Image (cartoon, rainbow, N blue to C red; front, side, top):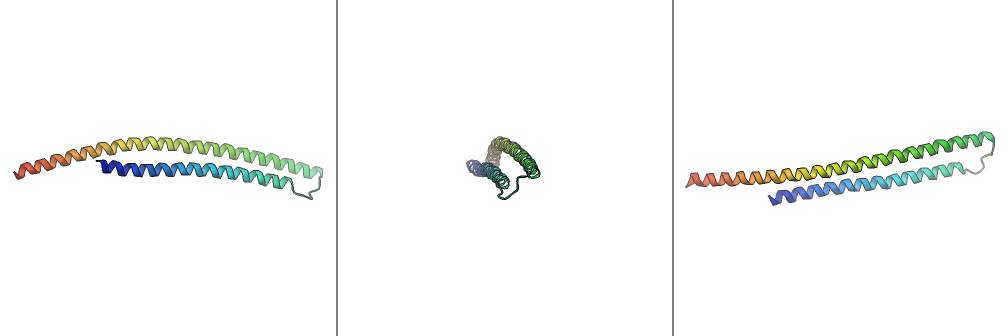
Length: 126
């Protein structure tokens, strides 16, 4: 029975680590994405040689409004996606705990059944 639980624990811990690493990677990617978007916005708004006319100022204002909205939407979406991933990880960990109990119970039942079968075989032989 201990071998089955040991195998299950190794498998479960590996899955937990993978899911934890995914969340960490998502957080890093989110930070890099938002940083990159901000740098693009800064680069576009500071292009040298653009004539300062009413049209160019209006276009730049519209661009900034659109870009700020895009960055804000991306932050909101990625925040919610990370929360969802963390909630899924929590649910998965709870499911693993339940599955471990099932493996433990099944292993105990299988051990009892095996011992009973061996005892019955010995009784028939004797």
